[in-house]
Image 1 (spheres, rainbow, N blue to C red):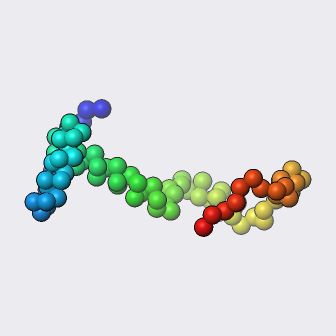
Image 2: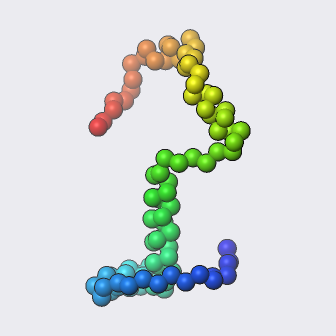
Length: 92
């Protein structure tokens, strides 16, 4: 994927951290910019994936809201499954 890079990102860093990042970039055979950008993007995706936000269309949001307001239906198969012993246990 090729894209034109029009935006600039500038940061200040202490010498020890810069040296650490440079060593890691060298170890992965990447430029310093490529290494920092990749690491920041990966971390950004992880942070955003942990957020409890779901974007829905207005129709999907209405359907979701209606489903939440309806009482849960437990059919016979589910009731039997819920009574079986579990093969796992919760670990807190």
